[in-house]
Length: 113
Length: 113
Image (cartoon, rainbow over the protein chains, first blue to last red):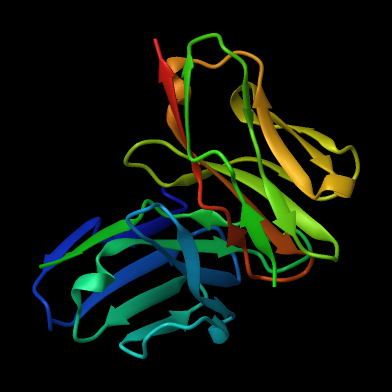
């Protein structure tokens, strides 16, 4: 069983559309994250939820809205997609604590045309 | 805030050569340190981690890293690389007890058979 799973793996869409990416973890972790990896492979955190509560919200356009229906799920909804949103989005999870080892999903490659 | 520098952007080695990838971080407090590997088209996988204790840590696939506190460094090493080590390597750091994981810009390793 995949520990952190994201769907879809690939997403190709037109500018201006709204799309969602789903993430689920079966590790029993209480914290989940969304990262964006740009074309230069730089990884930057976008959001983090702990027990369904938003705890990290980096400087991200408000077109991006995370939603955590429960501890095992963290979805990312993006409104009015722009060309610059093209990237690979990674979901991760961890158990909050001193060590905080994060486990990553396989990524969603978003291409905005 | 923490930051992570990986000075080598692209390293090309022949099989059996020794590897050392540099990683420096900036943060005045106690940190956890990680190396992640991303094989082509795959998700990030934890290679090794340092929390405390022996500054020389061993990870999977023959990799090791040494934490030198005075130099704020956590360099990754492998005595003899294989073609299958071709991947992107990311150093990451977080303050102990914090959720934010800060990544370096990554080093692409290409191993020539």
